[in-house]
Image (tube, rainbow, N blue to C red; front, side, top):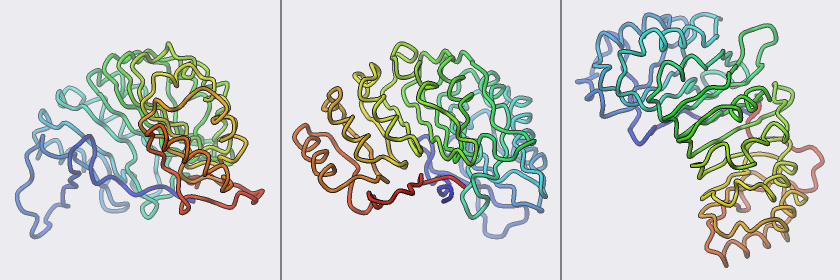
Length: 321
């Protein structure tokens, strides 16, 4: 199971990928602040550093509000380190940048398990006005290679933090929980599979679930997990849930045990949205959830098309390799 397609809209802006040099019929480029710029470096065509310098030369980066990094590697070197180095070195040229997505790569460009990331902490430190950060890729994708890292950080502006992973390591989850993010409103973890480095545990989430760490949090996504029942049981009594507006336990292996814990736990009727798509629930449990949400006016994302065989002992997350 593979990664999702790249964005069409990001941070409320249409995504624009600049054409390669010499492309015919490209037309005039859009205004720098009117789109989210997606840098695409097709393998074997140009190294990221060349595409980056061209972008700096041709676009008024002082007005760029949103930036996505698509395929960035050259030949077989897939590490994100050159991207992080460029962003940190030239951060002063992006005073208006408020949103950044690292590794906006779909499964036709590279499977998520092969996206070699690195320590992304310097990016947050170099961009103190950043409001949204998304990262796609596995944590320990390739043993012995550079992989996703995050150190605890204080960031006063970050409102949205999203990790889309086929294998999210526990140390990243713990680093988020130890960070000071007073403006954070939306937090999303895709935990992935243990076979691809996803070794995060429910205990790693304790600072997030306890409530005080992120006082403005309104959306929590604990998704794409092989431990979805355990996560649901923890959420059922987690103090943070009372102030959420939306909750997602989607994309994982949620079964009747986890759903039962939710139904028997604290009320979820204050939510606007409850996302449980891609699940392993039996029909009677689905009916109970739908009836409860219908009475409370909660939008529940849960239908027959999302259901996998509840009797199947082998359960899979939506995104792993």
